[in-house]
Length: 453
Length: 112
Image 1 (cartoon, rainbow over the protein chains, first blue to last red):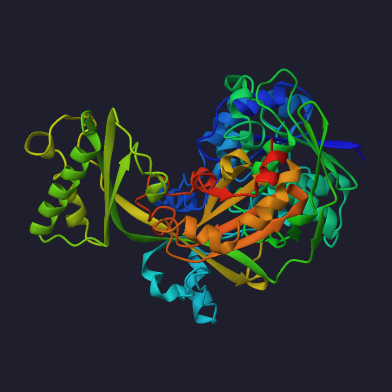
Image 2: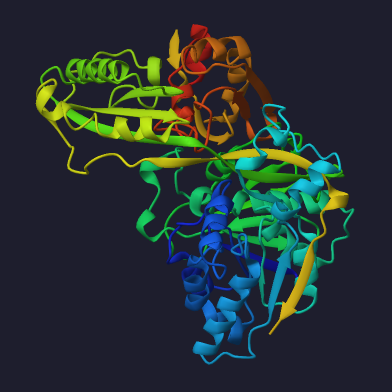
């Protein structure tokens, strides 16, 4: 057994730094590269892409990422765990095999593909069997939006990833697995942690939580002492150095920018947190109040003391459904009296929308530079150089939203003065794909693992 | 003496549906008790008047010298439904740090 297993984060979301995966495998020793691509509504975007072309429906950035690190996989034994499969892990695997062919690496790459999370085609049967899939926030049963559902995926845990690694997969591609399982599974596999070893599983999950947003624990988006954080242009992405006893260090490669400190890791620990005593995953319920952090060296934070307890009998399900339309437009008003001009423009626009008799579920006005971020908490008066008027509308009626997008530009010539910043043209009408979190009995979901070379 | 929270703490926030979470972390461990005492659910609810439509929950993490707040009804429906610039509650963190605390003078001396 290895004494230390290094799991390096290379992507914190789909759209993260393209350079990061390669820098992680070239900058120093790593055993695993963990790539997290899926946010809450990503699955529905991928489902739409798959509907247009059955060969798509996965995170296509992943192909470039694998290409950039392929020699590390084939020659140095670095293994990759990624949820890049989206709603089509098998197509993603085929694309990787094709890439391997093109790079002369045919037969040198073994893939593991995790499926079984996709519940879309089973929804009606599940509902008929009494699984209501109630919205965890509102309590409404899924039947109220059933005809508008675009995707439905259970968040799988570490089990199928561990199985794929056990069967020799060098690259494991999952669909909707929890972000944290992508890090915990390699640690569990390497150290042979049992499926009821709650403290160690919880430690692996918390290691995953710390690195799942990439550089957000290593100096990126870090408020603490932000002005002194060195060389963000060359920021080092985080690496977990895991040990068999469940303790681990968070580090980054030497010579990279950013900072790994107790404050930088603490900020990431509280990110998107609910009840800290009950961080629920399919593998274990982790207790964040047991975490001990210690600065164990330069850019090295040691994490110990973590406790966990058995998980629930449910999987969380991520469901996406169509929920109307929206559009957001902006205009910029300049000094003098920039705010008063923007406020007048807002009143004029709203009066015109009223007279057109358009119905919106919501019309939201923000004055960017004044109150968009902190609303009524901002009380200091200011002689603004400019204020951006930002108006958004939301409606079930696409025609109303479309008409709104045509009402902004006229204000440039027929509204208040000193207006600019309209070069982007009319706002775009977007279909809203909303998120419906639900729970389902674990017994109805069957994960499957396929290993292919 | 009045002290703005930004002098005592750093913070990060995120979203879960229509709820924003704000983690507030003491800049120094010895300042944590003042945060626990001053940042009550009532005070924080008052602070966010006009910004949130639901209740506030508070959780303590003494191991991290941190408090975690859940601000319900903070994001105009949340996620893709929201029309807000800050649809994902990313800067509720610094909105929290605008809070002004009235601390005993003796305690303020120890904060320096």
